[in-house]
Figure 1 (cartoon, one colour):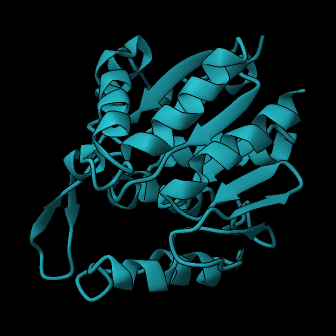
Figure 2 (cartoon, one colour; figure 1 turned 60 degrees about the horizontal axis):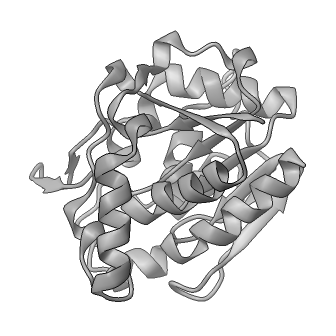
Length: 231
């Protein structure tokens, strides 16, 4: 049995370029699909957020449209609402990484608001990649990698081949012209190589100990890759 740390957003609003707030949180399937896969494999999960707040779920991610129909939406909602781990998080500042075997970061626009600039999250993700620990990150979750800055000011994930929610997908979703910054651009500027697949189709990249998924459809395949790393 492995112990897997979920680093999750505590933000329920995303600040847009004009200063207005867009309701957000974590994207349900990006937490629930890996959660189900890891639990089915017998692993233990701990959720950590900034300040230990309960991670808010993005209401849009619970809709039938976002989940391929009402039946799957009901299943996703049920897990998000009832899984004990999502409702009893610890604070990121309290995390001792040596107690865990892997790290998973779900997306949603929430991480662009808080994890992208959270020092504790950045510390955890820096230690994880340096130690060779498996790290899986999906969709907008790679925003958290932006805070993984080493003592000399370089990015701990610079030079890694990853994927993430793309500029094209953000445009298709209607958010690109509203955002303060675009994830693909910011990751590229930080020195990561962002590989782009078809919009909203499953796409996973594995580079050394880092596993990334492009979008919500990549959540299940990403979880499978992390399970392979855990043996």
